[in-house]
Amino acid sequence: MRFLTAGESHGPELTAIIEGLPAGLPLSIDDIDKELARRQVGYGRGGRMLIEKDRVKITSGLRHGLTLGSPLTLVIENKDWKNWQSVMSQTEISEKEKKKRKVTRPRPGHADLVGGIKYGHQDLRNVLERSSARETAMRVAIGAVSKVLLQALDISVASHVLEIGGVRATLPKNLAMSQIKDQSEASDVRCLDAVAAIKMREIIDLAKKEGNTVGGVVEVVVGDVPVGLGSYTHWDQKLDGKIAKAMMSINAFKGVEFGVGFDAARLPGSEVMDEITWSDLVGYRRESNHLGGFEGGMTNGMPVVVRGVMKPIPTLYKPLASVDIETKETYKASVERSDSCAVPAASVIAEAVVATEIANALLNKFDSDSFGRLKKELSEYREYTRQF
Ligand code: EPS
Image 1: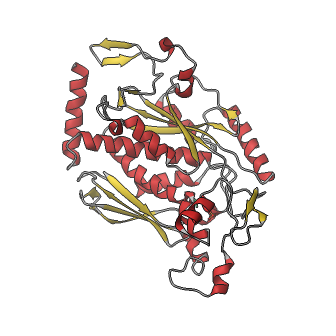
Image 2: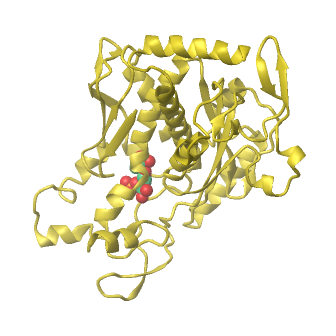
Image 3: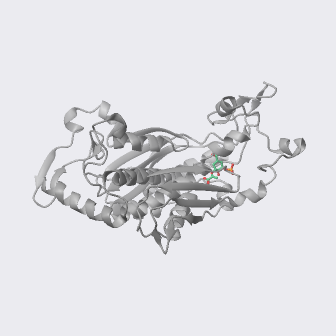
């Protein structure tokens, strides 16, 4: 499976084409819309989310509620476009009009300046329109399709927020998937620790009041993953590597870890490796999951546990110093409308990109022309691994 996304933040729409989905997978618009809605909520979001009501339109690859095996085209309209039609016009406009929303003061930490230098844009809006995290709406739509596939194969994906602005959740070990799903969904910061959630909201309020932004840490958990997705045989076949890349591709993400993650540097080997046991009923198992479900770049049958660090959003209402690219004078950076915290939304996005990589690994491993064949092969393979 491969996909492309296209679209500017204030252009008419976002588009994606997914190629390589199996035929015969039951899929509905609702499956995707409900994921889009999850990304749009969350404490700390800014004014743009009051304008957008993300809904998907499917224009190819689906018939009578089943995928055709042909490219699936997804479209999400940008409702805000109607306010930007002249600024984002595809045809020439007057110099006076062009100046109206021209951006010449790059925001530190955003793609503005480097993108401008790289592509020769004197109006940095040409960079920020595409580098905007608006694009993640489409990644969530693609992830929603992937989640439908995974769910139909009894693989479940959940996510939650572990930390915002230095406030960290205290959680019991071995949370059940249903607990993660239900409790994160019930919290507007997607945090499973109700006390930490109160403090997270306070930190977000404070940041907003001070014209600042805050980042955090999100965690994705994937349960009932079969053994052996990805491969140790070549560096670019390691699935943890692919997931890390997908996580790092989310706007503002600066780091990724699996299982105990960076703590592995401080712990003895005996507390990092997961001891192997065997029983008639389930076959091989690990008694712990310090390695986050991966050994040798392959899934080991334990839940995949991956965390990502999101830096604070670089668009600050109280902007930092920057240089005007026309005059070279020192100015405060441009102020674009912003969110004070998008970590809860990022948790939904992380869930989507991880689901996409796991789905892709399954499609690569098994006969995936038709969903029926895929399901049968996976079920036979699960039995094989149980009996190994
Ligand atoms: C973003 C800036 C804001 C965010 C946007 C990402 O948009 P605007 O410039 O229209 O106010 O709301 O996020 C989304 C549009 C979205 O759908 O998440 C940025 O600069 O990255």
